[in-house]
Length: 422
Image (cartoon, helix red, strand yellow):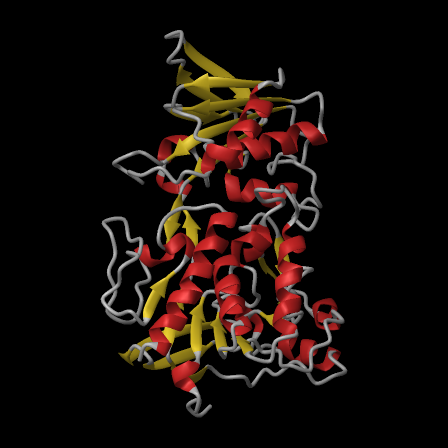
């Protein structure tokens, strides 16, 4: 692909989650050509994997569908999936960007019919479900994927099974000869909106994540509750698929801890309060215990906290659990904690324990391939060495979806300013 001729007025948005989509559409609808580069095979980011999100507690398909329609209707937006930016050079208003695209092994002829998946035999862990399920080696990332195009797992490429998959496609969409592509873009500004990663709970050894099947993280809970998730929306024990009656939420799992994440992510309390309602809406006879240090539900979310707190089926225990143990025979997990209000040592058994892990910026490990400024935790600073590089959303600080969208709008304006002032 050759350099773009109108590059000085083009904006590159790195990251196709809610922040990236919002920034891209704001810039495009202001009349500027926009390129979106997304590492996953679909747009929508982590919001696409949620069951519901604040502030309206609506399913992700609601907001994402509107944005996808805006993209389809706007010729100024182009996007590249399974792609990453490997180099940025130049000056604000005149930036050279190198993009690398991994082979998808399925081209634009794909109709989403699913015949390739029917021909596949090998199963691989489903990344969309955080490994809670398996998926065929020819798979659609998820049922609302945009673009609606299948992916062939590299695991089977070069095998007889891959040839069987190719033969099953009547449209010539399976292209096993696809190679990695590298091309250059000329743009005027770059908005970095690569989002966040959930903290690796397996590093908190005393909580047993990764060892105990019935200890999961908050992002996994979203998938369990989602109708397009591994259990079709039924919140059950991963160990045996049994319904859950007693569920515990452990707040600040690794957060506000100098050995893990020393900061508060701000939204984990709200996520657990929301997920407690998932459990009780599905099983009115269930009970929920939330172990916490502080409940942080500020401003407009305080009413939601008060509503959840008033539910007699939900117990709040002020204390950070010191250990979680599994009963290998029953699969139940026992949480041990000192109740800070009474001084009593509690040991309660649960069917499922949900760890509220914090948000880690993607830039903590994967730095921008250009000069950039970060804080001590890897979040990008609002003030960057170059006015042509603008961070947006959760790479700056942990925020909810609504705040990410607001920040993305501001980032689009800054990108436009960086170009027109040139």
